[in-house]
Length: 249
Ligand code: PEP
Image 1 (cartoon, protein in one colour):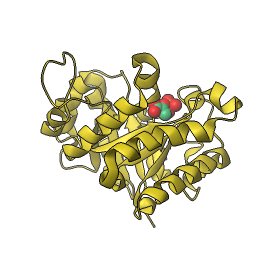
Image 2 (spheres, rainbow, N blue to C red):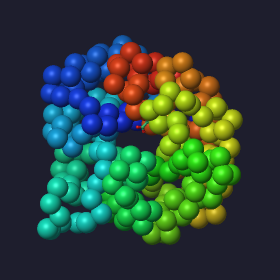
Image 3 (cartoon, rainbow, N blue to C red):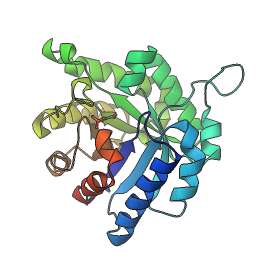
């Protein structure tokens, strides 16, 4: 069976003391019950160094929440893939719906970010997902396929090295989760799209994200094409995140 991946997205939360407390609790929990799945935490860039040293040698991989589409130079405020790599960053979220919505990120920009990450040896976790209006208009499939197509098109042969996260925008931070059947339906669409682009489609992890929690994780993760979770709110509570990790076993 393919190893699942559970990635936490801390968003703009945390602080030196809170991060230490959360990671200490997580590391203790994972020591007591070693995970069968891969585990990652996407932390605010300001805390990469702190978290890198706290998770060193553990089962927890370091992830960033974004990466620049540029390699270096006069791009004030941006953080390059090479800089993330300096801190041992293994994954970078790209195209999270909050970046698309609040920062105007386009499919093309997201694809360029994914390419920069790949070039630096960082695995991009490419987020796709429809808004509620798009779902209600029957556009879910077209939207996620368009978002993924940009990445497939730009990255050509590297496509088998990415992770995809299906995150319906209406389910993020709302407490309203896609049903396992709704999520599986979209994951199957994404898998078929990947299969048309690479013979390695089966090994590309397809994560579900959107109000995943300790109570609903097992059912979502039992679906055929759901290879893990991208977890926001519930990743900030050690006990909840540990339960989700256990559900992926
Ligand atoms: C996310 O931020 O990617 C996310 C899925 O958030 P939440 O789990 O809080 O819905």
